[in-house]
Image (cartoon, rainbow, N blue to C red; front, top):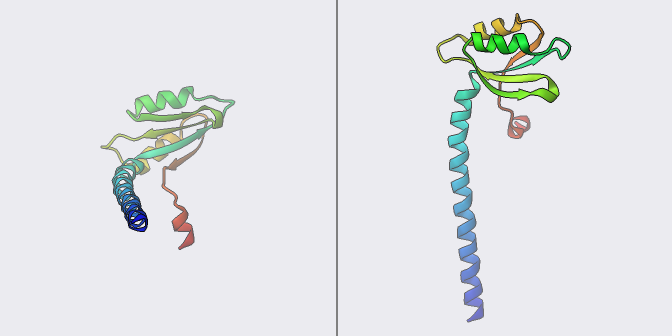
Length: 116
């Protein structure tokens, strides 16, 4: 009788683990689709700490971009460009702002991509 109870418990535990894994996988794929849409219009901008970010923050406002993150420790920001504009145009615009060192489009990196 004890072996049947143990077997039932092991089966139930296995089913719970399986259900948790499939649920998590669905959640990840939904988040990934949304992240990819947002990433397409997100720029990571690094600025010279000696110059500061005042001109950059004014440019963000003028361009009607949305500030996503302010990376004070590494002197950078992440912004999302307005939906109506051209991404290459936005990159060029922010590259010409006083104190800006680099402008890069956000991207998703995966350990699985390295293995391939």
